[in-house]
Image 1 (cartoon, rainbow, N blue to C red):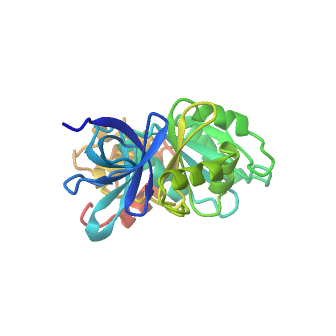
Image 2 (cartoon, rainbow, N blue to C red):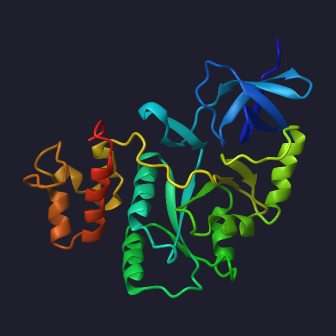
Image 3 (cartoon, helix red, strand yellow):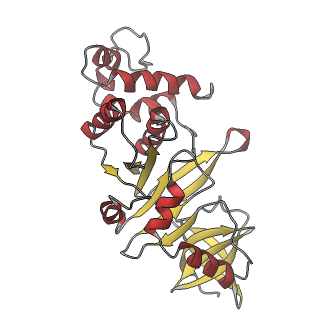
Length: 295
């Protein structure tokens, strides 16, 4: 009987999957009956030839991040994540609606979330400071960094240690610059994966897992700027707003939509200043964006 080996999925390369085992990287194929394998997955695999393998089983995941796919389905982006670091900046325009969307997804997928304000060399506005204070009050860690001047990077690197993390954020906020600052030899590591698996130049825009110099792993997913509200129900979206969670059971109706429903504890808290009115208004906007099948 062929020996089952345990490995870690570190990249998708064309039709193949790069699996790390005992500090070696093997290009593997998957059994057709398996669901989609994600970077960060721990898998059982067998050698199918001297330098190739076959993934036989995906081991249980502690978390999985998904994005919308075709036919209203979802596709995994990364597995076994501990924390998503949401990167944003003054330029381009600071999209707090997108930040709330990321946080709502994390709240519902057993993934911690933290905020990273990049480009701190640029002047901040009072409005941004007010919004940031709301997030800090909710318990979200905030890191102020500048990839350009390298300020705040040591604190961010310390936060990334000993866990599996991912940077997320809209295009132009400096995720690539931050990733290159955190992983100085990123290009070398990427080329090593390609050479080891004999797959030519590694040009994938899908996720790739890198081991950090000080411990921990960073999943770099340049092709996934927005992972959407994939699969979230209306109630899960509301749960994704951390300040709503203790209030939801106090609404008069158990199926309260937190709109104009009578006896809505969430809306009342927003109106009397108990929770942020701007966050509540963004919840209403996100609710409008949800696929009608989930509302």
